[in-house]
Length: 168
Image (cartoon, rainbow, N blue to C red; front, side):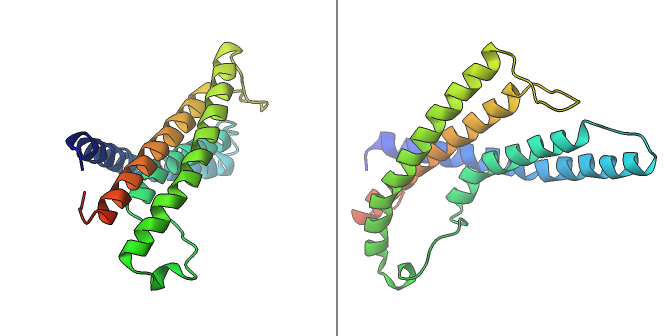
């Protein structure tokens, strides 16, 4: 494979590894927010921000951790026939089917960017009593979808290399 493809795959893998490892710690932040929510309910102190903050943290956790999950091949796969195929057949099927994922992620990213631009332009807020701005979490979602698109492209290059008898 050309050097630029090898560099691209290594860069994307390193980037998504770091972002994924960071996103793992968001689970502890989520637990702290939910613990505070429970404590504030017991003390009859209504913390209206905790539920939505927990939702935003969960979205960031999933969106930023998704590319890392794909990288580790820990995603759920429909495995009726796949496990019986040879590595070469798996590489062919993966190289072909990754285009469906890339198309889906491209459409998703387009819609996410449009929605984020709208949120920024009109200072969109949640319709709850706390009324936080929505743009920050939409930006995180755009970053997560973009990283997933980068990782799926890296997977395509890895599959092509495997078909050529190389390893990236």
